[in-house]
Each structure stands twice: as structure tokens, then as C-alpha cells.
Image (cartoon, rainbow, N blue to C red; front, side, top):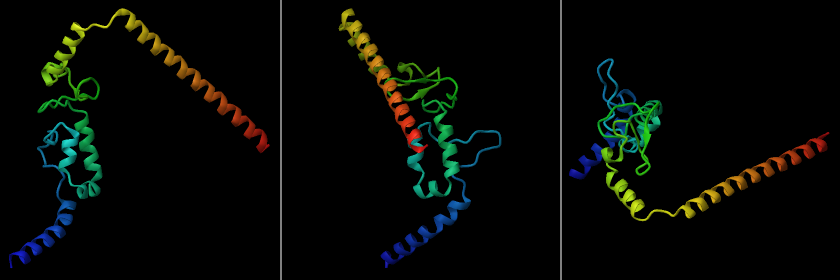
Length: 166
């Protein structure tokens, strides 16, 4: 008896969300002039909470929400826009406003501290630094040369194809 009630409830709930999803807003409405509160600054958290059926039906709203969240500081509860000016953390790869950009402020302080300690206790010799720079420059020259050779090859094959067509 209880199983039948559960099945009826499941079938009715499966049928009704699609009707409700079309009319109900994706995010709770706000007062006029205030920005929508998505509840998080993390894009992945935001997308995890939105069912895929809703994403299919309201793709424009979801894309707008994701774009807005991507332009905000990743520090919790900070709503500062970082689209024009912001800092990317080299440790956690998140984007922060200048107020929360320091690793110690947003939570990467321990990693930065370990890195600085390691660099201080075991500095690279000057000879190694020079060799790395020379290696980097040689790699850069090689890539440029390969690119130029590829362009020249494409031009040759393009010109021979043009002659064959005529």
C-alpha cells in the first residue's frame, strides 16, 4: 500500500516539475535595483545545484548566472567584480579582487610560506638559472623556425595546387 503511494507521488512529481520549471524563475527574485544572489562565487558549486533538465530548458538564464559568477571575486561573500582588474592565484587558480588577492588572505598562505622557505633554504645557483634561460630561448627559436617552415610548406603546396587547377 505504501509502495503504491510512493509510486504515485514519484510519477506526479516527475510530471509536475517540467510544468513548474517553465514558469518558476531559476533563482529567487530580488528587489529592483539589487543584483541577483546566486548563493556562491564558485561556478562549479552553482552548476552542481542546477539540475540538467533545468539547464536544458533555461540555458540563457544559466549562462547569464555563470558569466556573472565568473566575474566576481572567488572569496566567499565578496561581490567585487574582477572582470577588469583582478588577480589569479598561482596556487589555487582562482580569481580574486585586490583586497583578497594575497595568498595569506584567501587561504593559500601555508603553501606560499612553504614555497618561500624552500626557495630560501635551497636557492638555485646562478649557473642553473642561466642554463634554464638559454634552454628557454633555444626552445623559443626552435618553435619559431618550425612555424616558419610550416608556413613555407603550406605556401608551396598552395601555389602548386593553384597551378594544377589552372
